[in-house]
Length: 155
Image 1 (tube, rainbow, N blue to C red):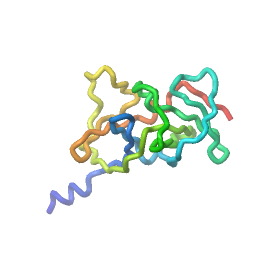
Image 2: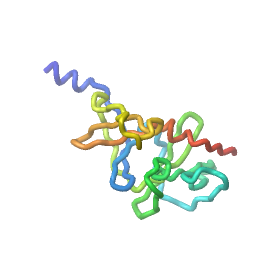
Image 3: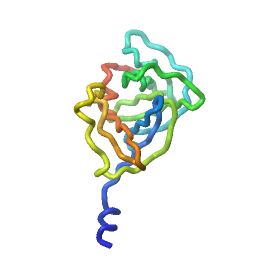
């Protein structure tokens, strides 16, 4: 009985899972403000190629990132399953175009490992770690690193 209590008391983190191509990724659910369908995006000049442009969301200007490009996975394409995940970090707000939303999962802290340091393609500033969930791996993204795009949107 003691083992069950310890397991139930174990801290679990909640993640919003989504797909980019054939891989599953996740963002900390506490940073997700909302999920919207893609809409017309206004392009802005002289920004990194992964910044698609801006939208107005209830009067707030929100930059939209192509998350595939941000993670150097190629260019994203809008399909009927595509969604924009709107996230907030401190005073910053941004939307991330993804291929599709999967589900919200709870992962025990003991099932989260740091990103493998031997994999040169993983930018440790963009990845928090790797989570194990139901026999598969989720790449847990670091919102601070993704937000740190060198892009400043002034209102």
